[in-house]
Length: 104
Image 1 (tube, helix red, strand yellow):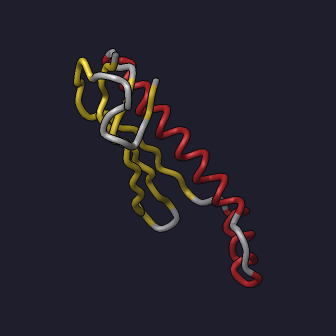
Image 2: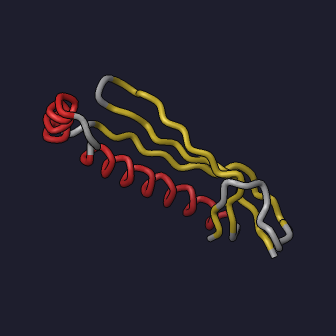
Image 3: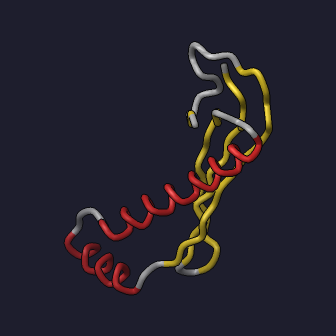
């Protein structure tokens, strides 16, 4: 599956358009990560626990989007975008969406 943030794939022709595909995940903070993040806020630096949580969330949402596109018969997803939002205190949604297409 080709996944790209641009509107087309250089050297390819879009033969079929399947429409919007999306994937999302909602994740809550982990108390251990929260404690470590609180301590890091004092001394500064990367919040590695949250970086890992975001990476896992992004991969899960992307795979859900790709699975949906494959079910439609697509071999590419173009114009991919990410969005995040707070669902409730301590929980956030990561949402990814794009346009499923078949390219040649």
